[in-house]
Length: 205
Image (cartoon, rainbow, N blue to C red; front, side):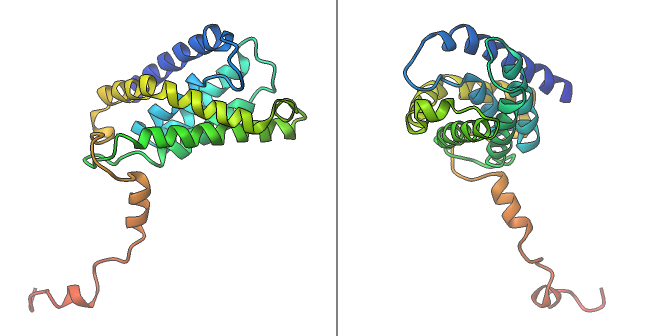
């Protein structure tokens, strides 16, 4: 199963990188560029969870850092997608749970904003002031718009492929729920073994 995950993630990331560099990067749209790699990472994370999302994000970001015509410090985008993948994975649905079809769009919207701001912040730390000259507000708004327009054509396909090779990874996307975050909440609740539970025991057993 792990090998299948690695192969699928690698194929999707490479395909996304090729389209990102050869097509989306040459459209010369105003503001930011549609982030296909981020959408792939979010789709995988929503099915496989934070660990796989973090790993896929780091790998995808590192490839983007190394691929021409990259002009920023190596590891900058890897850090951003690593954190985005981990955060998106926290919102996956648990096996057997149902969730809203709008949850992926909400996650994409948050990832678009966070990744743009975080990328600019990391750039400022290493001396890259390009975002300051272009205007961070314009970059955030355009990134949000482009990614939301592209998400319905990318994220469902990625999630479907991820579920095909790992059917037990996530429930169907039809109801509502917050998945892994709900699990973290329930694990912290007090144990049911207490005075009321002891009263139900049959004497002598």
